[in-house]
Amino acid sequence: MPVPLATATIPSSRLALSSLAPETFQSEIRAMTTECDRMGGINLAQGVCDTPVPEVVEAAAVQAIREGQNIYTRCDGIARLREAVAAKQMRDYGLRYEAENEVMVASGATAGLHAAAMALLNPGDEVVLFEPFYGYHVNTLKSLRVNPVLVALAEPDWQLDVDAMRAAVTSRTRAILLNSPANPSGKIFTLPELEAVAQLAVERDLFLITDEIYEYFVYDGARHICPATLPGMRERTIVVSGYSKTFSITGWRVGYATADVRWMPAMAHFHDLTYVCAPAPFQIATAVGIEQLPKAFYKQIAADHESKRGRLLSALEDAGMDPSVPSGAYYIMASAERLPGKTAAEKARSLLRTTGIAAVAGSAFFRPGRGENLLRFCFAKRDVELDAACERLRWL
Image (cartoon, rainbow, N blue to C red; front, side, top):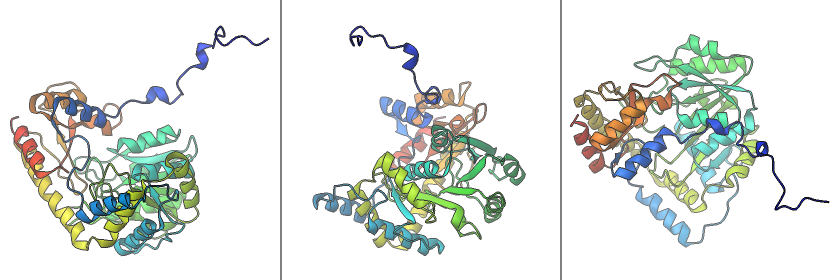
């Protein structure tokens, strides 16, 4: 006779977190954002990119909503946006992708990476990444039981140690994950460095997954090179990017991935299972932006942020924080040695208390024991907020 539910006992050992869960914690970036919001500070921690949305993009989103474009789309996105992304890849890099089956609209670039990892990697596989790293890259892999293998870039200019990269590849390596321009360092991988990565990928028959979300944020005459353009790389490269940063729409969650037709159907399947689709009206608005904004718009993005970079660099130098000069993206890594605290997290909170400026502990971007004397600052802010933050930093 069945035991009544009211008196049945469930063994406590069955009610437990997964083997992954004990390793999970709120990212230091979001933790600092929460603390900054609580005390009404200026958030230079999270890359929210709160600069204005281009008017044509904003208007297109409002119009799409009012016209009722609010239902599910195809899991890999509307045809108009896939075609716009394919045209953009041809225009910018000479890369030909079929919009129908080699382009996927994702719920942000993070979703594109997640779908690629689910489609192409197995538990126990290894992926080589470069340190300092973006935490979501490492933790996305860990969440799928894929093992990240870190290769440290050489300070102070974050140069690639080719020998260290090659030594990190084992029989279990399936891919290399590369972020350029990079968060948090602002590094742009040079052509010789990318050629070394490509040579290794071809030799060992590896995938290359590239996060190129900051492709238009380049300074001092630097040039972003899409690794898929190198010989033998298109078929094995998964390009992940989006318009969150470019159009200042980080909350819209519109990214994309381009990949060979052999990989894309599986990627789209897993994107469907996890996210269903990116928001419909925002897909339409992003397509309008790609179609209508001129080349001068992208040059202006770089010029505007180069100016912002210069102002924050100057303030950090005046504060005695010895910043490194990023070639791309919109973050600055600076020394926190002068700040009180034993760890970078303690130093970041000390800075927030004394100046009302939120930064991210450098340790969030390194393996344990590294980055404890570094802080990361974001300069993709409205001018009035950035200038106020610079003034406060000079109090130091």
